[in-house]
Image (cartoon, rainbow, N blue to C red; front, side):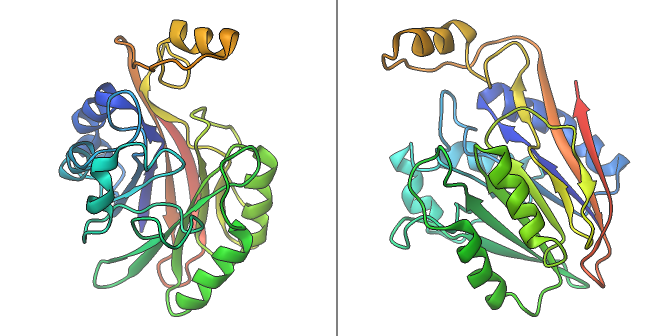
Length: 256
């Protein structure tokens, strides 16, 4: 089976670009399941029911998120409903939403786990311990995908090797810059440190450059906006042996 994982979708421009190009990408690459990180899909920041529904209606099967998932209060009740939108599993157990989701395709099932990093990030429980706990629950499922929403490259790489041979693929999100290390680890798990971003090319991680510069220079709060202009999509295609759960190939792609 082929799984398409799409890097952090940013703002209206990112959502619209995804909708315009996803059908052709899925057809060309015979995609069975599409996952997208949507924690910044609302204009400005965060995710809303509207932006999540837009992605799902555009052909995304499951939305993962990260540290910005709770920026919009209107999404809290939505996350508790039966929609395929998940938040990091190692957030506090009282927070809205679910930390993993099982996609049932009849001939095979795929579990997707969302985790948050703890290095240079907001407080969360240990992702290594949490993923062990979840894998014990998913012991009957061979095909398992992990979105590790983390800042530090070392933490992402370490989790990749920690899960090597135990899950089908680990991809990083959050830093919005696609890395060039897509590979299959020694025990059969596909890995990439960061998928990248789906959003404005001439931006600072999807934010209007002048606003990002102002915040970094002054340290003062700044209301972020997503700039107009050229948009691109970063993603990764994982080919998985559905019988064994081992990765067969991994390919990072960019659509402009």
